[in-house]
Length: 171
Image (tube, rainbow, N blue to C red; front, side):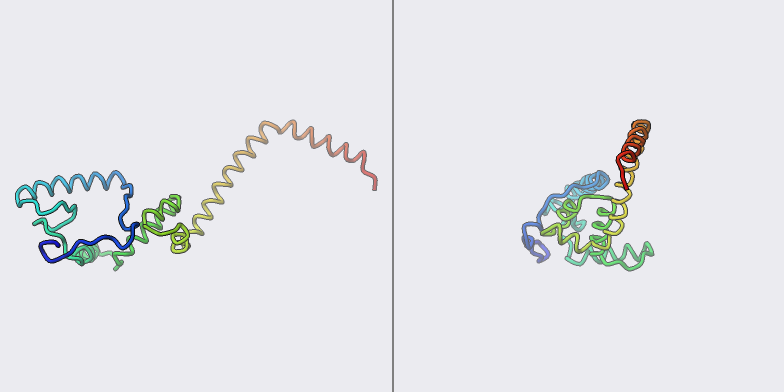
């Protein structure tokens, strides 16, 4: 039990405790935060090893992050977006950037990739369009290379086939 009466408890499932890769920018910010925090802990005396806590080292109240988030978006004059919407935005942006749905599913802690794809199917039309464009580029490149290499041979072969076929064709 924490000093302010809060209890730490295990996640609901094994997927609730998972390792995910972080962008380098986030790692740099966390290191900076941790260094500042360690200086403060030396001054106050360490109570725990929490990464995010109050200035006195005690755990935040459960709603503190949400309250802080709403203050921030109000100050930034951003339309009201629920804190949980950040999770959906994260998943949507990853899928739009072409990140493998399996990786997105693992980051979110979904039990199956199907759950992720069902939840974020609104992103799929964009992904389908992008997939079609990529296949189109591959085909055009391959066809362009083929036409350059075999243009003369293909025209000779086509002429031979047509003339040979015409000789043996009887109506």
